[in-house]
Length: 569
Ligand code: ARG
Image (cartoon, helix red, strand yellow):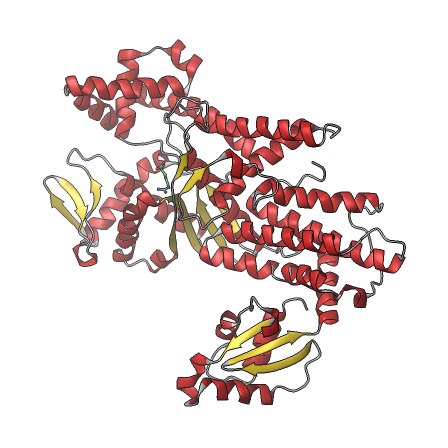
């Protein structure tokens, strides 16, 4: 047993009839002041049902709870019931479990909870992969690992922006202002240049716009020449995106982007018509959402071409049919809130009960501190430059702090890139971020490098003690491990599973990032208060067992964030 919260919920549930065990579980708090117990249960919500004052209820329940082996004390203070864990029991049960499960601790190995589709990264072909896509990539990737850790089978989809009128523009621009050689040599940068140029020229000559629309219509009708160009632009772009994914260590199970749905949209539009949801307005087909106080959802333009929402509705139906998902999660910037709200409603109006399983996870903007990057603004290389600069800066720090370190280059990659990933998720994701090197790469702050460094420090203690991964600690004298700093470490370790659940339920990888910092801080306090490599073998073994457990949990928490845990740095 290591989930005391669950045990307490079970215990309480035998004394409280009007709430389910789950409801009780969710109401249990962890008091910040340990004088108030290790766990506390507020009785306010029971007052109405029991027609009694909350403090009375608390008192009654405490009176009914007898001796419980893992609790040293249960008491009521006002309307709260406070539970004090028996320290030795607590330490024993948590440590035993972590040391047995090792780097599987907290992570479900059987994926039997059903499918979860996660739509993340999803950059636009022929456009730069910017910091917003970076955020979507790292948040989505982390949610993927978090849901997997809970026993779901995840399907990561890169819903590439590879369809739409902009490709008509790109074809016209390519024909007028570029060449095969230039695109091959300069890649996305060239595509971007001519795309911008197209808009400048179109202001002077509106006919270009019509030409572009015609090309897109041709594409939608299967015209070979324009599709060949389109597919070439896509290939060029993907090659550049892949470089970034490789640096980040991110993968996908499907690259079915918007174009994939081209031949599937007609059926969906027909379905919408049959269900009586389509209204024709000035030649365009729309679904009215007046009853929801929302602007209508555009399904086709007056020239018959499809839109972003048409493709999302079609993709959702396809994903439901293909994966029968429990949830389908979309990670994008919050600017797309209306778009998702609209088409989720359309699915609802189509009377699909799985409309409730569609989840939009919006995040805030990232802005660059002025002067923080040497790069040309808006340039395609912006994101790759950030990652490279992170690695360069980290390499310099390593040169200073630990010049003897073997495989410096690899570690610089893991720490530099890990730092950027961590920073994207340290605060609630809805918040905007002002990117600052000073914060991102601070080894002592609440950062990725700090957590990684703490992990490496634990590894170094274990190395010095000659303890290898998977070491069997045998019988540990738990009575040695009851000082405050140690018990705090143990409580943090015990919270791992609950933190994963909360991060998943709230779609907040930031809970995991903050948890990792909490564990690292608890460890550093423990390390400060307790000498580890001491003469007394029993004491040494017991404390090393704590260090080993911390190592596993930090490694696992970083894994869930998509960050590597180097053993030396
Ligand atoms: N390509 C879009 C963009 O860059 C994001 C796509 C998100 N996913 C989706 N299914 N709409 O803004």
